[in-house]
Image (cartoon, rainbow, N blue to C red; front, side, top):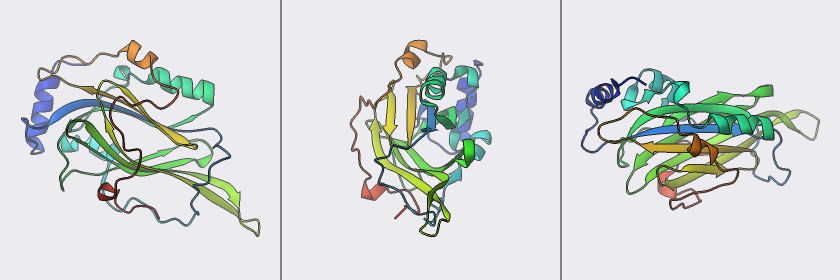
Length: 238
């Protein structure tokens, strides 16, 4: 990582109108994976005709590559969750639908806090889409509405193949410097968050942090575990 990072991030904050005295930059890394076979106990399956949930928001990949909203992509060699992704593939046969690490200047939640649209495509047409919104108060806050679609997973009465749609909607408060796991019988989300100090030293991969990535859900910060009605993603699913 180049030591030009402090100046570059400061320039991004200025260019996007973010107040440097209130924005708190974090290095965020997110993995979204689909399980090889969803749990047979799942009863949260929406019909293939469920309306799209991407009613608004910035395309995350576009915003990241264009460095909008102060975002700054980080190179793959800085990822701290590569070992976790490899274990998911080897041990669970999981499909990695999304894996990115970036710098994100976080601000308190407001009407202008942007939603970002995520998308990903896995094996056999398995597809990820959804929206996320990041903010910060005492804890880092995440609101997400993600869904994974598996084509031809079910059949209608006349034998017509139907898609199965699995949804994860959650509001989560998270402590930093921890690995957080959002679980669902069909897919999961792993999040690593690293607050950056004011002098923005070089970001280093922490093998100990990655080695402790949980196989089950952990959360050092408080979590509601449910979707808050005042922070529902745009175009929420029925």
